[in-house]
Length: 134
Image (cartoon, rainbow, N blue to C red; front, side):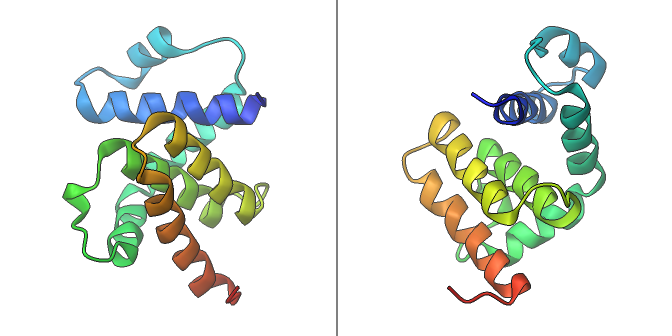
């Protein structure tokens, strides 16, 4: 497994823990932080998702047909937030990689229907904003 994939997995776990617990991030980092990750990239994801959360949630809501944001699982929301952060603000990750990594995270951490749901939202967003219609 690549360092970045492992880092994304840890970022997802930390974002989930932040959302469902009252623990401060520094405590969660001490508890959940394995050694085999890219710490700089982890901080980039956590900081970016936290900073742009309202904007990312707005995009998710706009592209979630027949779904209210509050009804989307915490895991799926955080996978979408991370992928959208990478699409919007991280110029080092190709869009196809960000989308594929989100799908892989959903296969590992969410329900059987989640990969299709995640792909649908990210694919629609990408097509609308990249000018690609394939």
